[in-house]
Amino acid sequence: MRNFILNLLKFSLLTALLYLLFLFLSGQFLPALFRPNLVYKKGAYGHSFSRLQEMDSLRECDLLFLGSSHCYRGFDPRIFERYGYSSFNLGSSSQSPKQTRILLQKYLKQVRPKKVIYEVYPMTFCIDGVEASIDLISNSETDKYAFDLFYEVPHVKTLNTYLYTSMRQVLGMDRNFSEPHDKPGDHYVPGGYVEHDLATFEGTEVPRQQWHFKREQFAAFGQIVRDLKEKNIELILVYAPISKELYQSYSNQQAFDQGIRSCGTYWNFNEIMSLDDHKHFYDDDHLNQQGVTLFNEKLIELLNHPSTQP
Image (tube, rainbow, N blue to C red; front, side, top):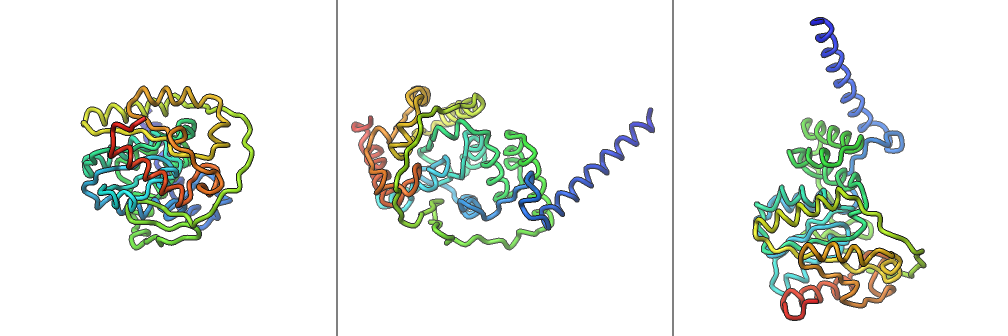
């Protein structure tokens, strides 16, 4: 029996080492098409690497923004600075409440924001969070929080990304990596914002549909609300503008609004302001710079004049 256990342990160790070797070689030499379960996104779409690098040196701010691409493409720190607010945008692509909770656990004590403005796009409550975890793991240090990003979203892709990223960092392969601030169509602005080249949206018909929410995402969201309340940090929940065609296509939008509103201050800017789908968006759910300016100035108006809050 003892020999069997020893042999089993040796076999398991050898298998694990071979798996790591195969994973590393696949990441190094195979095109992405031939390794669908290994996704490595360092310096890829969204400027997460630049944002997290800058975030590591931040020590305080008035406003901390969190959420999906509607966040890092929707809250421009330059506009808030003109009105006397220091801010940082910690949004990331497809960031769901699971990733938001872990980012807050990592950075909240370090940054000590006066307010957290959380962009709550309903789609982020409908997804598994694999894409967002892969993005953040690829672009951050493989510390406890990177492990949590895998642990909270257990999937072969998040596991492989965590292992591959860890091996690259141990070997010092990304030590001198730097990300250009200017990429085709996008420009990183210090403070975490990504400005898109000015474009307009031609519009399209959107069929009637429903949001299909995941219970575990609302559980993570509830934990965020409780954690911030315990720390006496004001939380403002914001639904950033999307095109009217897209917004009006969802038949259960009101149910989402009611659920989010029960958790605290909630501003749905699709109801608060009226933007032009063609002039103020570059696709059906992302504002162009003209739309961002109008949206941010309206948000600042609400922050500055509590009596006007909806």
